[in-house]
Image 1 (tube, rainbow over the protein chains, first blue to last red):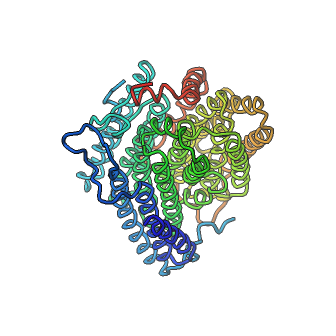
Image 2 (image 1 turned 90 degrees about the horizontal axis):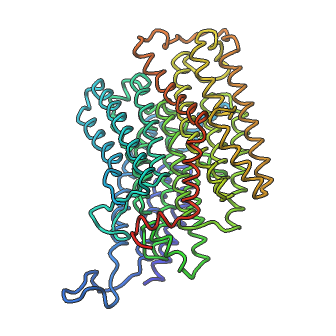
Image 3 (image 1 turned 60 degrees about the vertical axis):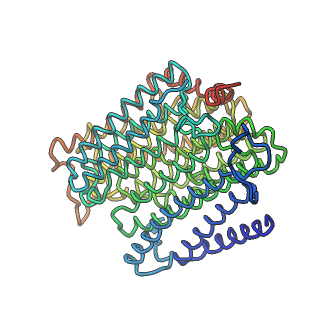
Length: 117
Length: 502
């Protein structure tokens, strides 16, 4: 399980970076989404995957006595997913605005601000 | 010591922003609420700084979950001083925005977003939890994205795309680093991490994580070679927005870097050398970049990068003197850089352009305003006794002490270039006779009502006064800086205050 996840994370990161390096802005956005998912999976993997154990203490004991599932990585990922939701929604709106203004999907068509070098 | 008032600078900005959203269609009321709210937050920040300075480190545990399990908010002298400076900059920018921001932008929620941005900044300065720091960073960047692209002109969204992409990328690196750190230690509280990181056996992975943090904060604070997004985007938004970005957004990266590298990963010789080399390159490339630009705001953007180099240099040397100089420079830089971009906003109102070629003759028309601007320029360059001079002395002294000759060279060269660039700006914008242009842009400043003029000049005066105070009463600021530097080298008071034990 860990090995599969590790390979998956590697694939997500590399695909994300590859997509970010393309000139098309839609692909850039997809790259960012893939990278974000990769980071979330990484937190999931590094939080130790424990199958079938509850993250709660039995009623009659004061602390954990056996292996338990750590709930914090899930909480972190949930937060990160919600944040990336908002950021992606903003980025998509921004791309639409860019498309309306320059009528193109190519990042090279935006390079007008630096022409006075 | 537990003290719940330290959460106030965060909550108050949130409340102001919410109230402003309800006043969506009333820009006039919005202006009033924003300025009044900012002043209120400033008063609370002063109180918070006073209490931190007199009683020591203050903490509060969110939801009463004891550290390291809950989210901790910590106010040590470093945090509260930055909150104070951010509040001063916030007051200045919100006063400037009354006239400095166009109606179309005000109608699309400029003021609420500005306060959300300030909330994010205060939150980032006060949090004691690394994941919470990530969340505040996201709040800051999403607010800054909206401010950056509000209005939607072509150069603005062009700059916006670069800014959004690189900041999202930096956040993902930050998140990755947090994930690895959690996997290594099983904790997220910064004070707890600083104890637990020593027990980790896999030192290689610890160093990799440290470098991931460095890269992520490096992108946000625009260090060499990760600064390229800054000059491509900072000159595009309106001056009031650029001012808050220039003064505070890059500094938040430096703040996070200082926290992480003093508490969690104390830099070893190898890391220090890398940081010193990067600092040298940042100092020089920023100065060279500013040298070739012909646009006032682009020159200022490159100066931001160059002066980030001084701050990075302080981290690289990591002695008490160096950290003292770094702190002083950080305080000075927040005030002066905010002021510079506000000045460019006033110049735009007067001349309608920021291109050096088309500017000139300002001194003839506005001698008093020019002298005010001259004070700001002099403190930027570091003419004694103004504020830029003292931290440079400390940094140079520290560089001599540690024998970083390359850094001494870079600091002197960069200071010299800053002097040259400012002298050129002075000559081109203020002394040179106004060029004869076919399309003479109208002077929108002189036609303004007295009240409007005051709201544009008052922020400049406030910030300039703070700069002058920092220069003349340098011993007070030096005392604060030194206190912070001592706390950074011996972090046990911080850890003790957060965890409540030894």
